Image (cartoon, rainbow, N blue to C red):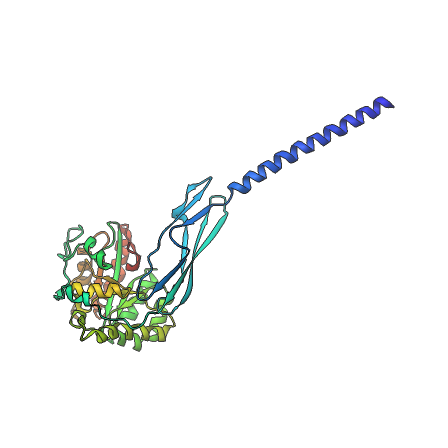
Length: 356
């Protein structure tokens, strides 16, 4: 009986030891997995930023790292809900998910403060206000054309004429008239799941409220083309500055009243007429200016579908910003074919506000 008891005791000790070893390794492994299983996001700059309008917000940047995946900054999803037209505190969220499906989120808070009345700066008088008409050599060999001011020089004014040297096309439509084929053009874009940019004047916005809402819902970008399609450099002086500001604010306010949302802070000079002074003022007001690198005489109401399509194809190049006018029936009729041919050649389409 004593020998039997001894075996029972030994067997019990072995079981206890085995369980202890199992629990030790399980705890150790779990501890390690807790350390390694979540990624990390580090925000550059401050987590709380104050902005006095019309100052623009420039993303300070961020880095994301995972012990297993390494640098995963390119996987970070940023959600920016800032409304530059309404003072208040807004949050920007940064979320990243690693390869095993674990996510982390960090936030940055932006406080928008409305400054007092925007004043004309004496320094503006030192900036050349000579009026120029925007031009491009409109090359037809598939190469990126030369523009009046290089893209690098334009960036000093938060202005752009082309996107990066990639197979991306940016369709932009200028609308100052009250009647056009713009609703039909929007239908074609929606059918092809293409997003485009529209620079609109106040009158068109005011007279097409439902179309404005539809365009926003479908993800199109709507920018400021002034209230009355006036050559803005003519107002870029201290005597006319109130009218200069009104051309922009009236359009902004009309759009906000109709849609309940602010316009994108993107801008195109009416008639393509600009000056270095006007570009400087627009930049200080928190806008980005967009010119173009592909254009033709598309406002001719006698332009046929075949002619319009050929002109569009003639001016294709990487990063092309197309200037198109919705009052041209030829443009409207050719648009569907142009989009499909570009897709077949490997081009994609994007919004100008995404150019970096």
